[in-house]
Length: 83
Image 1 (tube, rainbow, N blue to C red):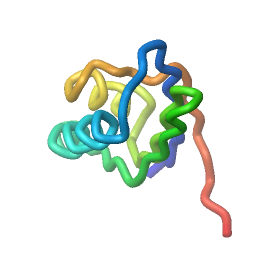
Image 2 (image 1 turned 30 degrees about the vertical axis):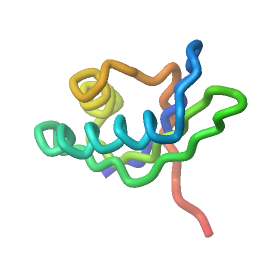
Image 3 (image 1 turned 180 degrees about the horizontal axis):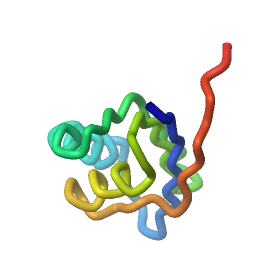
Image 4 (image 1 turned 90 degrees about the vertical axis):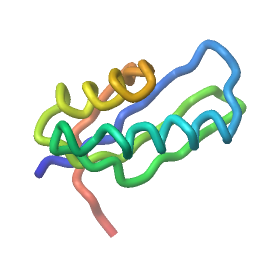
């Protein structure tokens, strides 16, 4: 299954707890779309969130975010894992 990194650029300030809650909401919704959100990273200073996700398509990954909390990524890139 393809692997994607999505990038969110937030205009409003959010906390680490806000991001963790959004990720938990993703985990609750992901099964309906055959998606697996694997990890996320948060840069509080820049208001950026990065999510690593296995999904059949960009649309499926975006649907999870849309349903779970409404914060659809600004950019989604297909990536390959390296070491």
